[in-house]
Amino acid sequence: MSQRTLVLLKPDAVRRGLIGEIVGRIESKAGWAITALELRTLGRPLLEQHYGEHADKPFYPPLMEFMTSGPSVVMVVEGERVIEGMRALAGPTDPIAAAPGSIRGDFGTIVRENLVHASDSEESAERELKLFFPEAV
Ligand code: CMP
Image 1: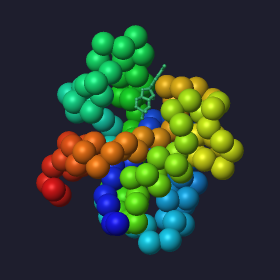
Image 2: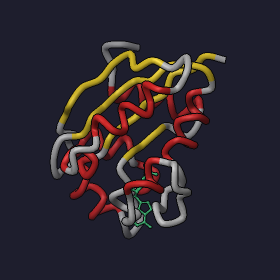
Image 3: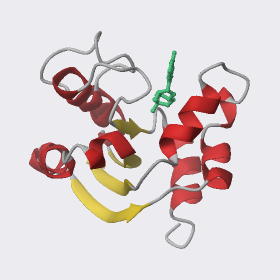
Image 4: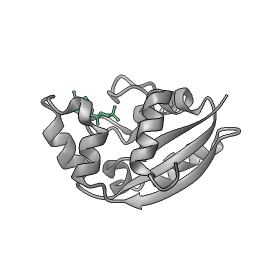
């Protein structure tokens, strides 16, 4: 089942020079394709919509600070079961709990600075793709 998902390489991944490494892992998956890719410093209005469900959480203010702290890579990835597959490639939210071999497991230690975002369901993917690439949907 071919799907589309939104993937973000967060400002920590860009600052640490991990774009090539992470993009390479995504490109290596058989049958997946990156169909849009842009380096973009994300603004608060967009992030407020993206992270709306977390607005009343204690980690929300520092999350917004972090996500606006520098450029992110924003991309659309398409392919076979890519929503579930990108979540598996990223690993769980907490990088310490993430298995080695996953992006977060290999490169992360901090929950907030967990390198990558990938949509968690078909509904989220639809919503997030519209938000980040309104011209393409
Ligand atoms: P993600 O799952 O992509 O989207 C929500 C983000 O909030 C998450 O990645 C982390 O960057 C951040 N986050 C989630 N839980 C916590 C937490 N307990 N402390 C700090 N940051 C968090």
